Length: 360
Ligand SMILES: O=C(O)C(=O)C[C@]1(C(=O)O)C=C[C@@H](O)C=C1
Image (cartoon, rainbow, N blue to C red; front, side, top):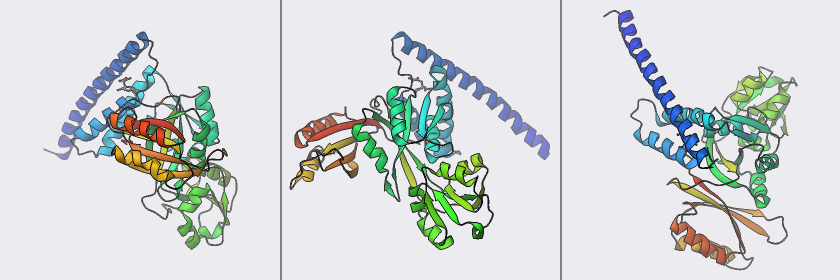
């Protein structure tokens, strides 16, 4: 068979498969519409179901036959589900803007591209808009693998009535963006202080004399740099594209596995999905053994803790509060028993939410 004949044979097969795929996706979308009808009839307006989405994505991952890798396969299904949900209810999701931040990347990774993303200027503003109901959900950064905790997010949880209903992790690659094409022409570098810190080694080595200017976000830095010759921003390639900047250097982060974890916040947390986490805010007695008494109930009920973070309470009542993440849903019997026990051992306990562990 000639190359042309061979190609056209396989392409015919691809066309037929695409046709089948389209019919199947359309059928799936019709099912989603039916689901919406069933929910509406019952007066149930929870169209977005994070636990169900996590279960579907986990199953896709487990059953993926290849040759596409799990990340690619789940991403495709993530988008199909996102489009189906948009038929039921178009979602608005607020994130730490402007356009092109890693928080926007996180929002799209978690919800897919069929939601509308709404850029807001600060973390407290995101909490306020979700509380007010002008958006359905918010996405906020919470911790970075090299720089640690995003304290602003944790502090806002102390006074917010909102819940955590999901988490998503994004691998962070920082680039040096500029109107200039050479390092020699750059006298100032703008970025969020966390990103400047994440690239400290590279900046010390390659731009030792450039001033480092912390600004509200990486994307804001890119926006400013687009109007200022002689400056550069540490930001994402999405920001380079949006603000028309060139990449002077790529992947300048000091740690190659630099990952940021983001939380999804909403007016309710998520039902049990089978692989869940619970986030807690705790205050313990300010006395010898106080922290030990706080951790004992977790150990007694064999609950694994994945994170503990202390923050000054800023309320005057307690000196410090602790943010603790544990494995398991608050409705799992062992977790529920541990929480009852914890309530007796601590001065204050607030469950910030139970939610599916990140799948994507
Ligand atoms: O199963 C549901 O409740 C649906 O609404 C369907 C569906 C889907 O497309 O599979 C869509 C949105 C939900 O977030 C979860 C799943």
